[in-house]
Length: 72
Image (cartoon, rainbow, N blue to C red; front, side, top):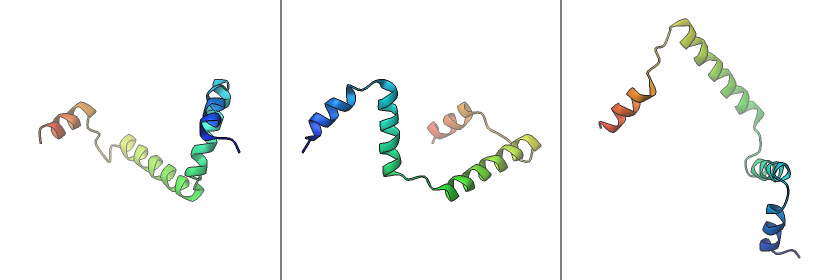
């Protein structure tokens, strides 16, 4: 049986592209893709972009938001 330290050493010795793929697969195993939720978030993002473009909502510059937060 391979020990975790050996596995880690072997993993970090891989080329960057392979390590990136490994990290992606490991993260996906922890947080599986939920297509329905992803679709809902994409629809929400599109709705918000349209609201901004149409002028229905007003954006607030980030520095103003942080200044207000820090002022609390």
